[in-house]
Image 1 (cartoon, rainbow, N blue to C red):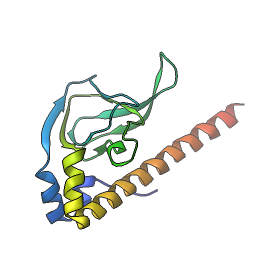
Image 2: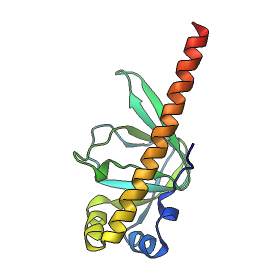
Image 3: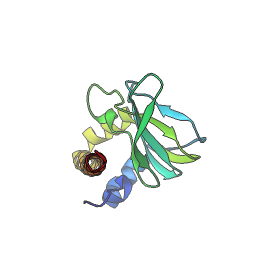
Image 4: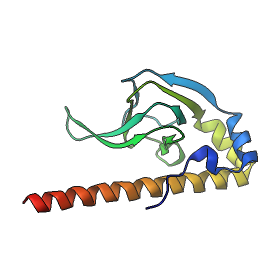
Length: 150
């Protein structure tokens, strides 16, 4: 399995510094819903401390956690891809401190600095690939357990 990529440490120092000029420090109390599926994805976060669970609604009464994120992890990628709607929901599992980035200024900075834009897109793609690999492993493990118990 690939190692988890952390957005801010993966960017070259000069590009990371440029991106950080757009950061705003925010916090979320435990049990706060950060976003809901299908909501407008106009920002993203890099978690500084705490834990966030990504979830998918499977019925009107039930959500299933699909990933847990912690320090250094990227929260939100839907801001980068049309139709700019969240694919999952997110909830603070504990008190969370994060850097928040609004999508519009980040995208404008990427237009101004194509090197930063390419580095950012590559890094987000690596993060998505890693999360897909992790999800695939979890699904295979669950399938294997179900087959053994049948």
